[in-house]
Structures are given as C-alpha cells and as structure tokens.
Length: 140
Image 1 (cartoon, rainbow, N blue to C red):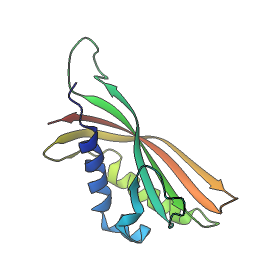
Image 2 (tube, helix red, strand yellow):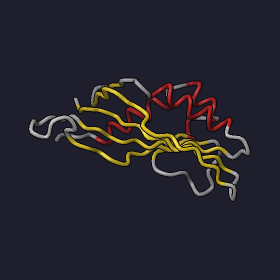
Image 3 (cartoon, rainbow, N blue to C red):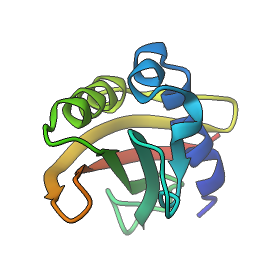
C-alpha cells in the first residue's frame, strides 16, 4: 500500500482555507487547524484530523492503493446559540460532502459525512459540532 496521509491532509486543508465564505465565518484562515485547538483557542475555530484508515476497502483479495480514511472535523464557537457553529459546519458540509478533490499527489474520489454530533459544553459556554467524513482516496 502506497499511502500518503500527509498529502491527503494537505488536500483537505487547502480546500478549507481556500473557501472565502468559510474563512469569513471563522474570522481568518489561522483558525483552521490540524490536531487539536489551543488551550486558549480563539473562537470560532475548526479542527480536523484523521482518526482511522482502511487499506483496500473494496476487495481484500486484490491489491490496490485505494484507502478509506475517516476524517474528524470539529467546529467550536463560544455562544449560547449554536448558530455560528451550525453555519460553519454547514459550509464544511458544502465543501466536502459528495465532492471529489485532487492535486498532483492524491485523488480523493469521494467524501461523505457519516456522522454529526452537536454538543454544548456549559462549563465553557462553547458549542462543539463533531462531524465524521469517509474519504475514499488513492495516491497518484
């Protein structure tokens, strides 16, 4: 299997930071991060990371470089209302769900949201929406 996780993360990141409406909702592109939010994050913000990868998801008997990757995206906003977090998550959905993306290193055949979980954290007055996307991809 010739996987290129780094290039897949770059592909997703470039799609997110390249979208003017998403960046406007967040305030600036620096609020899109890989990994986890800073201890004292500036809200709103978006965090993405890869949480699982499956090699050759379609046929275990035939070698292929296709992988299914589970991408987690978390949107945070510090508000009593979920409106800001909902708007950001809706824009991410528009950018990724049902889409294919590529660059010179990787082809993402498809992305589909498979889960969405809104959570209010009253101790911090923060809305967090956790979404999961399945990405079917192959290195080029």
